[in-house]
Length: 120
Image (tube, rainbow, N blue to C red; front, side):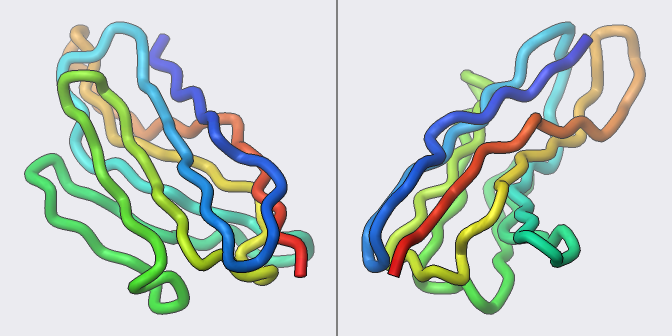
């Protein structure tokens, strides 16, 4: 079974930085798109940033210029560097990936989430 495991969340003061990591493991043949989403209390889950296998990226407007998504295909890992954090960035952050398994099946997988809390 393919699994995604996030790490790097925590508590930080406004203006600070955090780096999230998400490593995929299991019977992986190929990972296509990878992304970070977040869900704040009482709000819907939203896409924060996405990165294609070839490296092209897109970001939600509220994080442009502050967050950077990257990936290491050799390590099946996606990262989210978050700078100039604001209290409104507080949320549970989830990574997601579209994965083709060695059994020839493609599916979307999600991590368990990691809490990011930004204090004012």
